[in-house]
Length: 358
Ligand SMILES: NC(=O)c1ccc[n+]([C@@H]2O[C@H](COP(=O)([O-])OP(=O)(O)OC[C@H]3O[C@@H](n4cnc5c(N)ncnc54)[C@H](O)[C@@H]3O)[C@@H](O)[C@H]2O)c1
Picture (cartoon, rainbow, N blue to C red):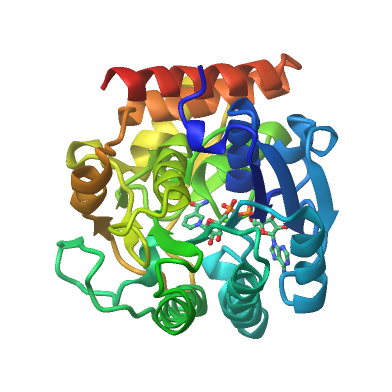
């Protein structure tokens, strides 16, 4: 029996469905008996989890730009979703230094276009805007960010996502405050790992690419510690929030939620490298000094997810070792030519079982 019954037989539109998180979300919703429609500009990587899971055969699959409001609206109007998730974004910090205008355009205007569609298409009962843990004003103090903390962001990616949160908040106050209007929320998470991510400038994809091409991987900050989490952890939170929005729950309407791992589950880059080398034993690693020349990333940050726990009984289900194992198992299956569709479904079902038994 699927866990998220609010979506059984319902129509859900996902922007960014060809990406890493969007593909996992589409697959999870398909397992709930949901009719899925996706809107993305392209399949962002090759290989991709989207193509590996053969998702285009199972959903209504559209190519388009979230900056093209008229086209996005047309897809909303023809599919008439009950609910919509907005994941489409330029999601990479380093790319945002190279291409700030595109990053601001896609991440801010794209969010406004998405919310405008939610506002104007009367089938839509709710929508969820996916931002990031980087929306908070950076601080050098080692403390946990709460949802009420001040927004900010020094690099263009973080600033664009903080601005997307302001767009969300403005739409909530201006257009969605009545209980009869669609119910929207925003969700913040980061450092996501899982099978099928081949994005540039992310640790495990970089390790896998280096292993595959038999080249050494250069690690700049082996001691850096990050709150890694498996992709199913934030997605389970998104689905919980979305289910409550479908019920028009007044406590969730207009709210923002953090999702992160438990404090004890932070892991260093070195630890992830070591675990990866255990599975992919001929991976070559070289530790190098920092050559980032002007690339600045937000220092170590961690999220408090107390609010999600108190309001929705959400908590992470996987240890760091399990999260990395599930991730590496997936890549190993892929490169050994085994069935990644079955493995993905098994991982989702095992995760659901843990949620049920928590
Ligand atoms: N992966 C992470 O660690 C992480 C962390 C925090 C937040 N996020 C957020 O989660 C969301 C999904 O991230 P991901 O890791 O799956 O990224 P991804 O790069 O794998 O996927 C991005 C998706 O957005 C689509 N897209 C990009 N520009 C577009 C445009 N102009 N028009 C239409 N579609 C466009 C791509 O085609 C793709 O489907 C993003 O909003 C990202 O900012 C991701």
